[in-house]
Image (cartoon, rainbow, N blue to C red; front, side):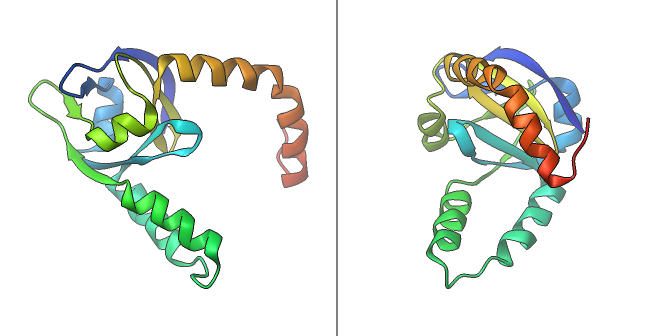
Length: 145
């Protein structure tokens, strides 16, 4: 399970260090793709395979299903670590998430997310303001704290 929030920088070549405990859980090769809310999702290979199977179940006759799977898979890139424990984030993904220098790397249960620091701070502030409302809505899904 991925937990925590860490601040890192991405260099001019698009390389970023991911926390060691995340690297171990991600394995030697992993997938980075466009995520929701303008961040990047990073999946261990095994979790990616499970997600791929679920997405294959979507009805391709529905335009929303086609659009989502195109968005998700077309942005995906297979990655691995360099000798210094960094990953080279592909340019199209850096552009999508507006990764320039200061980044936030967070653990979100089954995946890692990479955020531009300013985007994360704005998102986090907005989420904190509505946290109670969000928690109340989760009760509808039979989720209790």
